[in-house]
Length: 294
Image (cartoon, rainbow, N blue to C red; front, side, top):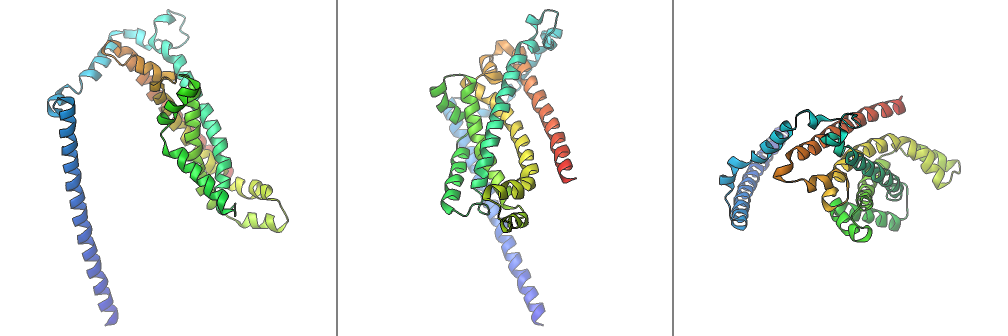
């Protein structure tokens, strides 16, 4: 009898909690709709235009870009290093800026990976018993992740000027903060039996980290690093808008109704590059982690 009453009480409490959740969800949806409508009204007043009147024109610009690209014919598809009129090929023109963008992503990822690895070890509570060191390194990861790459780049441009160095430094700083955070969580989930065995045999702290922790966390580090590389390729393109070089800077230059073919070429290059990197990094992660596990 007691069990039946307890079960009934639990069911009643669950029903009350479920009704309360539905009420809260409904109120949040109403608030969201009100904020959305209010935001649209404020935007219309600020821009002196109507959202509804602009909707029919939303595809005008994409159509103009595609039509201009189509009008260029085979010239649009001129491949890099073409021996027949390479100076006229759009793809050939921006291929070198694509290489610059990828180089920016590679260098910033390598620096961010190396620095983030070191910080993550010092930020792991199971590896460092000094609370002050852990607290300081964790606050560094918070600060490095708090600002978007473009904000950091805008600040660094005043120091290094408008060049790829500012973009690389900004992305590397943000990458080190993001990776150190993820790496430290991986470190704290590592099996400490190897650590304890090395400690019992008199190994130093560096030896315990190198032989007891790194072999366990290395596959996950590589996986996160490759994933971050994909993100950094997109970040490198975006930072070109602030004058940091690469495809992004070219895209900013040609954002105009008159350069539809150039814009289409840059967008196509970015899409194909990111897709290729995604496929290759996925294959590399599976192959590397599979070998390590084996």
